[in-house]
Length: 229
Image: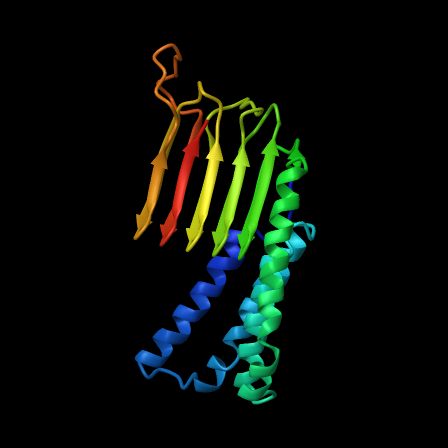
């Protein structure tokens, strides 16, 4: 089964809402939020930690890079380190990027993790997450990509009570959903400086029902969501 608890899209959305509220309080002169702005990077540190825990530490490099970058900005904001410190240690990010490339190679060589759960909740931050679903009573799930990618393979899944609903959010990243050839997919996603594409082949010998088997909704900003087979 998928991990229960706070969904990743809720956690990401909550951070965006908090930042928006701080901006609103500042622009309307309702409250002096200057001191609160200093701690905004800590929200992204928490998001990185949450991504690590939510993925059962399978998605490691991306969240760690986010934690290091946001943590560094936070330490700068609190005057606990200086620019000279960053100038000394910034090559660590290059090392982490190299490890990410190596990890991606090994990930391609091993089997994609499979889940028999009826739903999923996946997140890719500065990295990639892949999952194959083989549930016989699939109900839907959420996929969030922030400066990263999420790939979900539903070709071995079956829906007991259609439609299943998948909600995808791509912020400077991409979400790819692969579905069986005979599924009817209804897309209701909002792209802003991005794209939502159904890239499946149009085979005349495949009959698809009039009612959707899968509803794909969500939001895209500077990224993309694609449907494949």
